[in-house]
Amino acid sequence: MITMSLAEVADVIGIPVDSGWSDVCVRSVEFDTRRISPGALFVALRGEQTDGHRFAAAAAEAGAVAVLGSTGIDARLPLLCVPRAARPAADDRVDDDGAGNAAVLAALAALARASVTALVRDHGLQVVGVTGSSGKTSTKDLIAAVLRSTVEAPEQVVAPPESFNNELGHPYTALRATAETRYLVLELSARGIGHIAMLAGVAPPRIGAVINVGSAHIGEFGSVQAIAAAKAELVQALPPAAEGGVAILNADDPLVAGMASLTRAEVVLVGTAPEAIVRAEHIRLDTAARARFTLVTPEGRAEVALAVVGAHQVGNALTAAAVGRAVGATVDTVAAALSGAAAASRWRMEITELPGGITLINDAYNANPHSMRAALQSLSQIGQGRRTWAVLGEMAELGSETIAAHDEMGRLVVRLGVDRLIVVGASLGRRVDATGSGTAPNGARALHLGAHLEGSWGGESAPVADVDAALEVLRAELAEGDVVLVKASRSAGLERVALRLIADRTLIADRTRPADGARP
Image (tube, rainbow, N blue to C red):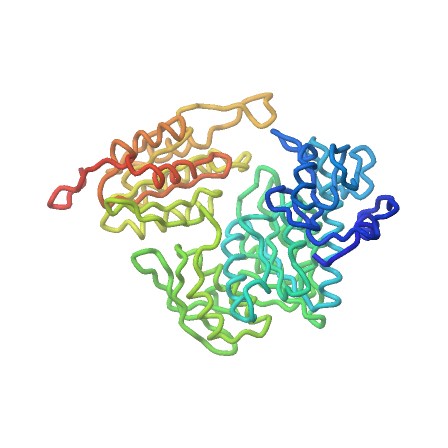
């Protein structure tokens, strides 16, 4: 962030300025006391298990100069208090989580907006925003890799760690940009109409990319059309083409391509369709499901060999290539950066080779029908000639589409010839819904039944109650050369399966394939 006095910070977020605050210098913002450095403003948030206000003393000891919060603290630090009742800086599009954090998050957004505005005006900062129903984080990582190939030092590009894409992570990431930052890459998510518009207002992008529109979070939006309207808020927030605005749209997704009429920015279509300006030709996959293709642009073409896994990464890479083109990178520079980019965020098609030639694919960070389909296709590609396992859990927030979407995934497992399916949570029948007032359909159970009812299949589906039960099956049956995919929505916590397989090598039994290569 730009260096500000505490008085300036208070003025930005709209609270009375205390005497003496003009002499206090704020250099950074943190909500985790373990990351605080001297000059930090500590943001105190309330959670389900604890209250950040209780850590004000620890923040002070670490070098914090003030606290932004919603109630009193037990430390001798200036307190920028945004009372829950008053909510003076709150934005109605910031959901109140019931813990009183909405006003604090709105104040954080106001501070980020002031910092980014000053950096754009005084230092030429360029902001890039990316959204979509799936693939945002992988695409953000590829964009950052391309942009880092155009600057003198990697730290001149700021991108969010993991999926920092909501009311907390988005302004927090924006506040990491400094006078030395040339590019700020931001990921924008939404749970409803207006959320992306609000986030785009925090750090107004010059370049905006929409990857796809799918059924992720359809339970909250109600329809795919509503999801498309929410994603379009990003390109609607871009400046006109005459002022440098660039909208990068997926030509292979009709709902995304249709957003071209909704923006004042220059439209750049990407994809495999003939009308795509930045296009992939001659796509092929190697045995590890890594894509190779010819990158075609108006300025020339170059060969790309991706290090990240999955055919779906081609579209993500094209979006990153279009961003590079928009900032003036050559096609050769972009192709080299894409080819050298490794997966930067954990638990997303993260491949680990285990003892006995077992390949583990940890894609457990999140899941929706689009990403689940892509992961299963990658499993099928990587596992050619080997025994394949899919350890799957529920895809959350699909609303009335829950049963149909999970049934489809179960049937896809069969059609792709996956040998073994373990469905975690499928033995529980119906479950209590989010409100606690009734029952909700169990998508995991539907996934198991979809596979079971699909028809002729040489494989087997095992419904299990939890992670421990899944590991018990794997402990008993994993063998040399197997390939294991682990995937579910974040709420399922299936990363624990992958992490325990990696950490506890005794979970893998000492058994080998028969000499003739037949499956046991």
